[in-house]
Image (cartoon, rainbow, N blue to C red):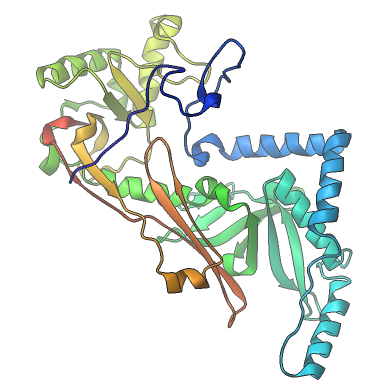
Length: 398
């Protein structure tokens, strides 16, 4: 398998087709991290903070309120209403009359009309980035909708399932199975089946949500190849409490003996191993010398770039980490675009590629007229195989 990768020019201002990418004295250079997928940029706390600050601006900025008001006027107007077009004109009128009466108080609280609900949905989509609509019934069996704001999406406090991510429970195929919302004073969490929830969000936020779990499952599948049979004996056998900077120095020496190129070399560890290295550096007074970031992330040490992944599979061999050169595992990604006939049935088809990993996810959405249900699928078509067996060395526990 041959993989090709295009390398960007490393010199600022040279070879850039876009003027905005160049750095000069007259153009600022924002101090931001390199591009990554949105799930890494937007954990639960960050999402909550962005919503809080956006709502503050909405309440305290006349400009923001004016923009939202104009968007509501021109985006919603009188609202979206169904127009019955069957061959039975009497039924058409009866259906439209029924919907009009229902729309006067369509939410579960009987406080808001259909048009007002549409306005609130638009406002939440702009300010919060998403909103949830629960399909429910009142005590008389009349269909109603219930609007749930994004801050109420939250994983249960006693959650021990690896498939619940940021308040959403996924099945083994990466489809949302249940949603978890906090109610009242946030002391109680309710579980709502996905088929009773409309999750309204911008499709470009796909990487944050909802492909996050699928991407992790793909990574776990690829990491399952890291075994003794594929990469030989472990280079180091050590428990987390005994792992320190001396071990990293020894690993560098052993890798040099394997004649690896000096760069790029990577080291992935479970969090307990990473934590002990940080403690060792702190005890030695080397925080400033080693260039610790404000977030406590490890800098490059002895030529290794560090990553932490606590869900690294043991693979029945007590795997706790590894040192790696990129040629160890070959990965190919091949999005499969729907056929023309299938594309006609989809309301949305888009792909998202993470700029750092190259992982491409596909998103499809369509409606089922028979069941009046909206359906969504996130998928990833990929393959992998062992490359150079000497380009990866395992770290295992005793």
